[in-house]
Image (cartoon, rainbow, N blue to C red; front, side, top):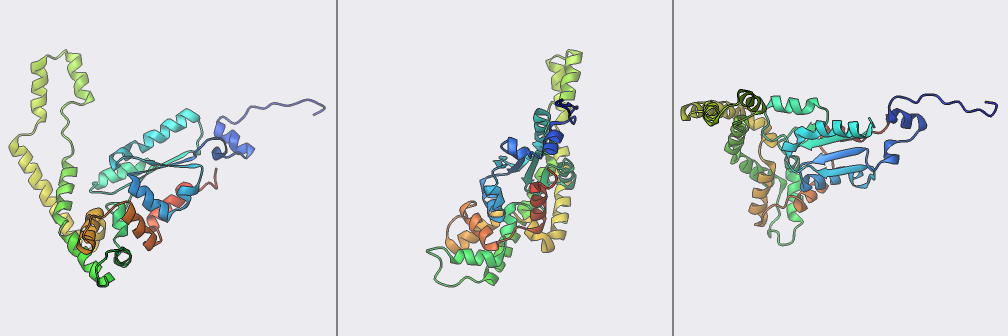
Length: 292
């Protein structure tokens, strides 16, 4: 007052300053939302169900190049926050469920930066017999007869049933994981001991299971997976079966060609019209800017 300016300390974070001034993060940086998906076909399908993902200039949709990278979503988010000090930036990785064991799903969800689909993969949400029949009928060169939703439903279930053993196999492989010969702890231990080649070989031999041990473990895992999948199959086959493989078989049966994930997947998504509720809810929360 009286021609004098008063300067007060700002809030401790730059994000708080922006909020106080009424400036959104999206007004000053290119993207305040970073959505990662497993591949181009996922991006196309989500683009149909959520048009805002394609039109929002402050959203970056990135090909995460496979679900295994989802474990890094939380790390990416923390790095971005540390780099720009802006707390409103959000990162979300939409990951297929695949045959992930519950403990790994829980670990991925804990970070808050990963959303694991309730079904095996995004194509499982396209296993809608009415939509499939309509899309099949829309192609040139289609069969001379009509294709009913009931006919598609029967063929779809038959195809899924033929993949039940594949689901069991993949569950067992997921549980087996990767054999780690040397980890950080062992490297440090051997370096501290100034171990020689023979010492290293002894450690490695202890980590390689014998044929009998491996056979016993596979037998146990296979029995457990077979029991679980068999118990759930009739009620949950739409969640468990490899959706893209089911669609590939349907396209071969009815059109005599391979299913194209991007072109055909987009058509199916358009025919279905709406995203599954759990995915719509998560994307809505992710895109919400009311608190920014």
